[in-house]
Length: 282
Image 1 (cartoon, rainbow, N blue to C red):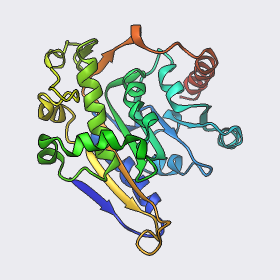
Image 2: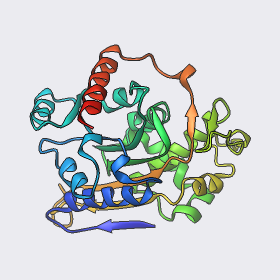
Image 3: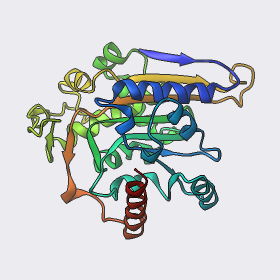
Image 4: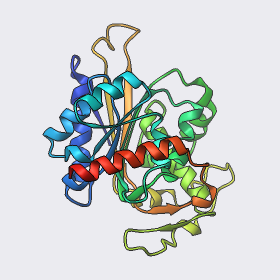
Protein backbone atom coordinates (compact mmCIF):
# COMPACT_ATOMS: atom_id res chain seq x y z
CA UNK A 1 0.00 0.00 0.00
CA UNK A 2 1.28 3.48 -0.89
CA UNK A 3 1.35 6.15 1.79
CA UNK A 4 0.90 9.68 0.47
CA UNK A 5 2.47 12.67 2.20
CA UNK A 6 1.01 16.01 1.14
CA UNK A 7 2.10 18.54 3.75
CA UNK A 8 2.94 21.33 1.33
CA UNK A 9 5.78 23.31 2.91
CA UNK A 10 8.23 20.98 4.63
CA UNK A 11 7.02 17.87 2.80
CA UNK A 12 10.58 16.80 2.08
CA UNK A 13 11.59 16.91 5.74
CA UNK A 14 8.45 15.04 6.78
CA UNK A 15 9.40 12.40 4.22
CA UNK A 16 12.93 12.24 5.64
CA UNK A 17 11.57 11.61 9.14
CA UNK A 18 9.29 8.91 7.77
CA UNK A 19 12.24 7.21 6.05
CA UNK A 20 14.40 7.07 9.21
CA UNK A 21 11.43 5.92 11.31
CA UNK A 22 10.62 3.15 8.83
CA UNK A 23 14.27 2.11 8.68
CA UNK A 24 14.37 1.87 12.48
CA UNK A 25 11.46 -0.56 12.40
CA UNK A 26 12.87 -2.63 9.53
CA UNK A 27 16.36 -3.14 10.97
CA UNK A 28 16.79 -6.56 12.56
CA UNK A 29 19.02 -5.17 15.34
CA UNK A 30 19.39 -2.00 17.41
CA UNK A 31 19.56 1.09 15.22
CA UNK A 32 22.56 2.53 17.10
CA UNK A 33 24.63 -0.31 15.66
CA UNK A 34 23.52 0.32 12.06
CA UNK A 35 26.13 1.67 9.61
CA UNK A 36 24.31 4.08 7.29
CA UNK A 37 25.47 5.40 3.93
CA UNK A 38 23.36 8.30 2.65
CA UNK A 39 23.31 11.06 0.05
CA UNK A 40 23.68 14.37 1.90
CA UNK A 41 22.41 17.78 0.84
CA UNK A 42 24.01 21.16 1.61
CA UNK A 43 22.64 21.29 5.16
CA UNK A 44 23.18 17.57 5.87
CA UNK A 45 19.73 17.51 7.43
CA UNK A 46 19.57 13.69 7.32
CA UNK A 47 22.34 13.61 9.93
CA UNK A 48 20.27 15.81 12.25
CA UNK A 49 17.13 13.72 11.78
CA UNK A 50 18.96 10.37 12.10
CA UNK A 51 20.68 11.34 15.36
CA UNK A 52 17.38 12.65 16.74
CA UNK A 53 15.90 9.23 15.94
CA UNK A 54 18.64 7.47 17.91
CA UNK A 55 21.20 6.51 15.23
CA UNK A 56 24.87 6.67 16.27
CA UNK A 57 26.65 9.73 14.72
CA UNK A 58 29.79 7.61 14.28
CA UNK A 59 27.86 5.22 12.02
CA UNK A 60 26.47 7.89 9.67
CA UNK A 61 28.55 8.38 6.50
CA UNK A 62 27.44 11.19 4.22
CA UNK A 63 28.12 11.12 0.46
CA UNK A 64 28.19 13.96 -2.07
CA UNK A 65 30.13 14.67 -5.25
CA UNK A 66 30.50 18.34 -4.34
CA UNK A 67 33.84 18.91 -2.57
CA UNK A 68 32.61 22.06 -0.79
CA UNK A 69 29.62 20.24 0.68
CA UNK A 70 31.83 17.37 1.87
CA UNK A 71 34.37 19.79 3.36
CA UNK A 72 31.61 21.61 5.27
CA UNK A 73 30.30 18.31 6.64
CA UNK A 74 33.80 17.27 7.72
CA UNK A 75 34.32 20.63 9.47
CA UNK A 76 31.46 19.59 11.76
CA UNK A 77 33.49 16.48 12.70
CA UNK A 78 31.17 14.21 10.73
CA UNK A 79 32.11 11.34 8.42
CA UNK A 80 31.79 12.10 4.70
CA UNK A 81 32.89 10.61 1.38
CA UNK A 82 33.41 12.76 -1.72
CA UNK A 83 32.30 10.90 -4.83
CA UNK A 84 29.61 8.64 -6.24
CA UNK A 85 27.52 6.71 -3.72
CA UNK A 86 27.68 3.55 -5.83
CA UNK A 87 31.47 3.81 -5.94
CA UNK A 88 31.32 3.96 -2.16
CA UNK A 89 29.04 0.91 -1.91
CA UNK A 90 31.15 -1.18 -4.29
CA UNK A 91 34.47 -0.24 -2.68
CA UNK A 92 33.29 -0.43 0.92
CA UNK A 93 35.88 -1.63 3.48
CA UNK A 94 35.83 -5.34 4.26
CA UNK A 95 35.73 -4.77 8.01
CA UNK A 96 32.19 -3.35 8.04
CA UNK A 97 28.96 -3.85 6.10
CA UNK A 98 26.37 -1.30 5.02
CA UNK A 99 23.18 -1.72 7.05
CA UNK A 100 21.21 1.17 5.55
CA UNK A 101 21.73 2.52 2.02
CA UNK A 102 19.81 5.77 1.56
CA UNK A 103 19.54 6.70 -2.14
CA UNK A 104 17.76 10.06 -2.36
CA UNK A 105 18.42 10.15 -6.11
CA UNK A 106 15.81 12.82 -6.97
CA UNK A 107 15.86 11.86 -10.64
CA UNK A 108 13.39 10.19 -12.97
CA UNK A 109 13.30 6.47 -13.74
CA UNK A 110 16.02 6.80 -16.36
CA UNK A 111 18.03 3.98 -17.91
CA UNK A 112 20.87 4.74 -15.49
CA UNK A 113 18.45 4.24 -12.58
CA UNK A 114 17.30 0.90 -13.98
CA UNK A 115 20.93 -0.19 -13.66
CA UNK A 116 20.91 0.78 -9.97
CA UNK A 117 19.84 -2.69 -8.74
CA UNK A 118 23.12 -4.06 -10.05
CA UNK A 119 24.99 -1.41 -8.06
CA UNK A 120 22.97 -2.35 -4.97
CA UNK A 121 23.50 -6.09 -5.11
CA UNK A 122 27.21 -5.73 -5.94
CA UNK A 123 27.75 -3.47 -2.91
CA UNK A 124 28.94 -4.56 0.54
CA UNK A 125 25.51 -4.95 2.12
CA UNK A 126 24.90 -6.72 5.41
CA UNK A 127 22.29 -9.50 5.68
CA UNK A 128 18.87 -7.83 6.06
CA UNK A 129 20.21 -4.43 4.97
CA UNK A 130 17.57 -1.72 4.50
CA UNK A 131 17.51 0.32 1.29
CA UNK A 132 15.59 3.48 0.38
CA UNK A 133 15.33 4.80 -3.18
CA UNK A 134 13.68 8.16 -3.92
CA UNK A 135 12.74 9.11 -7.49
CA UNK A 136 10.99 11.93 -9.32
CA UNK A 137 7.99 11.43 -11.58
CA UNK A 138 8.58 12.50 -15.16
CA UNK A 139 11.69 13.30 -17.21
CA UNK A 140 12.17 9.62 -17.92
CA UNK A 141 10.63 8.93 -21.33
CA UNK A 142 13.62 6.70 -22.14
CA UNK A 143 12.10 4.00 -19.93
CA UNK A 144 8.60 4.16 -21.41
CA UNK A 145 9.03 0.69 -22.90
CA UNK A 146 9.91 -0.80 -19.52
CA UNK A 147 6.90 0.86 -17.87
CA UNK A 148 4.58 -0.36 -20.64
CA UNK A 149 5.73 -3.93 -20.07
CA UNK A 150 5.16 -3.63 -16.34
CA UNK A 151 1.68 -2.09 -16.42
CA UNK A 152 0.52 -4.66 -18.99
CA UNK A 153 1.68 -7.60 -16.88
CA UNK A 154 -1.55 -9.14 -15.45
CA UNK A 155 0.02 -10.36 -12.19
CA UNK A 156 1.50 -7.01 -11.19
CA UNK A 157 -1.66 -5.02 -10.56
CA UNK A 158 -3.01 -7.68 -8.20
CA UNK A 159 0.14 -7.34 -6.06
CA UNK A 160 0.95 -3.62 -6.24
CA UNK A 161 -2.22 -1.95 -7.45
CA UNK A 162 -1.71 0.91 -9.90
CA UNK A 163 2.00 1.11 -10.76
CA UNK A 164 1.84 3.24 -13.90
CA UNK A 165 3.10 6.45 -12.26
CA UNK A 166 4.73 5.36 -9.01
CA UNK A 167 8.48 5.33 -9.65
CA UNK A 168 9.19 3.58 -6.35
CA UNK A 169 7.03 0.62 -7.30
CA UNK A 170 8.52 0.53 -10.79
CA UNK A 171 12.05 0.57 -9.37
CA UNK A 172 11.24 -2.24 -6.95
CA UNK A 173 9.78 -4.35 -9.77
CA UNK A 174 12.98 -3.69 -11.74
CA UNK A 175 15.04 -4.88 -8.76
CA UNK A 176 13.04 -8.10 -8.53
CA UNK A 177 13.55 -8.66 -12.26
CA UNK A 178 17.31 -8.18 -11.93
CA UNK A 179 17.51 -10.57 -9.00
CA UNK A 180 15.43 -13.16 -10.81
CA UNK A 181 17.95 -12.96 -13.64
CA UNK A 182 21.11 -12.99 -11.52
CA UNK A 183 19.80 -15.78 -9.31
CA UNK A 184 20.49 -18.10 -12.23
CA UNK A 185 24.16 -17.06 -12.05
CA UNK A 186 25.06 -16.23 -8.47
CA UNK A 187 24.72 -18.04 -5.16
CA UNK A 188 22.74 -16.25 -2.45
CA UNK A 189 22.90 -16.71 1.31
CA UNK A 190 20.35 -15.88 3.94
CA UNK A 191 21.17 -14.43 7.36
CA UNK A 192 22.13 -17.86 8.71
CA UNK A 193 24.72 -18.40 5.98
CA UNK A 194 22.61 -21.06 4.25
CA UNK A 195 22.12 -21.10 0.49
CA UNK A 196 18.60 -19.92 -0.30
CA UNK A 197 17.54 -22.48 -2.91
CA UNK A 198 14.40 -20.62 -3.88
CA UNK A 199 16.57 -18.14 -5.74
CA UNK A 200 18.12 -20.60 -8.13
CA UNK A 201 14.79 -22.19 -9.05
CA UNK A 202 13.28 -19.10 -10.69
CA UNK A 203 12.59 -19.18 -14.40
CA UNK A 204 11.64 -16.34 -16.76
CA UNK A 205 8.39 -16.28 -18.67
CA UNK A 206 8.15 -15.57 -22.37
CA UNK A 207 8.31 -11.76 -22.18
CA UNK A 208 11.76 -11.81 -20.52
CA UNK A 209 10.81 -9.94 -17.32
CA UNK A 210 11.17 -12.97 -15.05
CA UNK A 211 7.76 -12.82 -13.37
CA UNK A 212 7.69 -16.52 -12.44
CA UNK A 213 6.98 -16.94 -8.74
CA UNK A 214 7.05 -13.15 -8.52
CA UNK A 215 4.73 -13.07 -5.53
CA UNK A 216 7.09 -15.35 -3.60
CA UNK A 217 9.88 -12.87 -4.23
CA UNK A 218 7.78 -10.02 -2.88
CA UNK A 219 7.08 -11.98 0.30
CA UNK A 220 10.82 -12.55 0.73
CA UNK A 221 11.24 -8.78 0.82
CA UNK A 222 9.15 -8.45 3.98
CA UNK A 223 6.52 -5.87 2.98
CA UNK A 224 8.28 -3.00 1.19
CA UNK A 225 6.95 0.48 2.01
CA UNK A 226 6.02 2.85 -0.81
CA UNK A 227 5.77 6.61 -0.17
CA UNK A 228 4.77 9.64 -2.22
CA UNK A 229 5.14 13.32 -1.40
CA UNK A 230 4.38 16.49 -3.33
CA UNK A 231 6.05 19.87 -3.52
CA UNK A 232 4.20 22.86 -2.07
CA UNK A 233 2.86 24.13 -5.38
CA UNK A 234 2.25 20.75 -7.03
CA UNK A 235 -1.53 21.18 -7.25
CA UNK A 236 -1.44 24.82 -8.34
CA UNK A 237 1.50 24.99 -10.71
CA UNK A 238 2.71 22.86 -13.55
CA UNK A 239 6.20 23.23 -12.13
CA UNK A 240 5.41 21.21 -9.03
CA UNK A 241 7.22 17.94 -8.42
CA UNK A 242 5.91 14.58 -7.22
CA UNK A 243 8.41 12.20 -5.64
CA UNK A 244 7.98 8.45 -5.16
CA UNK A 245 10.09 6.20 -2.97
CA UNK A 246 10.43 2.62 -1.84
CA UNK A 247 11.96 1.33 1.42
CA UNK A 248 12.73 -2.37 1.65
CA UNK A 249 14.87 -4.91 3.44
CA UNK A 250 17.20 -7.16 1.47
CA UNK A 251 16.44 -10.74 2.62
CA UNK A 252 19.81 -12.20 1.61
CA UNK A 253 23.34 -11.45 0.48
CA UNK A 254 24.45 -12.20 -3.06
CA UNK A 255 27.96 -13.33 -3.86
CA UNK A 256 28.81 -11.74 -7.19
CA UNK A 257 32.41 -10.69 -6.67
CA UNK A 258 33.59 -12.45 -9.80
CA UNK A 259 31.23 -10.34 -11.91
CA UNK A 260 31.52 -7.00 -10.10
CA UNK A 261 33.08 -3.91 -11.68
CA UNK A 262 36.78 -3.15 -11.15
CA UNK A 263 37.53 -1.48 -7.82
CA UNK A 264 38.20 2.24 -7.61
CA UNK A 265 41.50 2.59 -5.73
CA UNK A 266 40.94 6.26 -4.90
CA UNK A 267 37.51 5.52 -3.44
CA UNK A 268 38.85 2.46 -1.63
CA UNK A 269 41.64 4.43 0.08
CA UNK A 270 39.31 7.26 1.05
CA UNK A 271 36.84 4.82 2.59
CA UNK A 272 39.62 3.06 4.51
CA UNK A 273 40.54 6.42 6.02
CA UNK A 274 36.90 7.01 6.99
CA UNK A 275 36.73 3.53 8.52
CA UNK A 276 39.91 4.17 10.55
CA UNK A 277 38.61 7.53 11.77
CA UNK A 278 35.29 5.93 12.71
CA UNK A 279 37.10 3.22 14.71
CA UNK A 280 39.14 5.79 16.66
CA UNK A 281 35.99 7.74 17.56
CA UNK A 282 34.00 4.77 18.84
